[in-house]
Image (cartoon, rainbow, N blue to C red; front, side):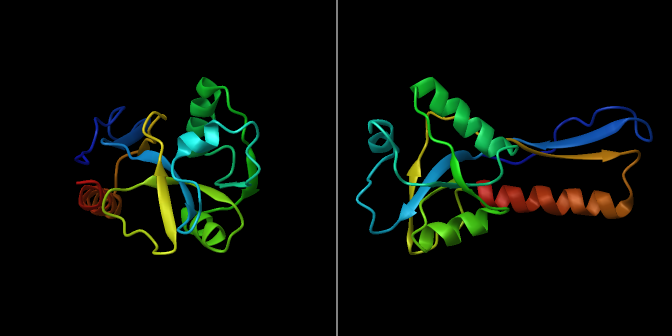
Length: 155
């Protein structure tokens, strides 16, 4: 999956501008390495999921995409613990507070105390950048560096 700049909307200097990264990562549930849960399917087959879901806030696209995937499966499982970053999701899972909602980034090093349960049939997560007006040299450098970092992680 390659990261590329998408078309920029608007005319430079007027209206919103965008750069979109292609090759979106999929969502993944995170469990403690020693968890008896071997697949996400095991969770969906339960009458009720007792484990708290640790996730980013409910207004984040990763959470909304996850809920859309659960809805298609007829599964109700809502956030029990909301945290502000994926790193905090991982920390809470590693400390035994529940099952975490994360994103599967191909070259991101997995914490040794965690195991990912891929959510292959769930919607992927899109990332992009928005700005107003003509890009400054600093913004152009930031866009280039961000796209390069995404290529390294996603390829």
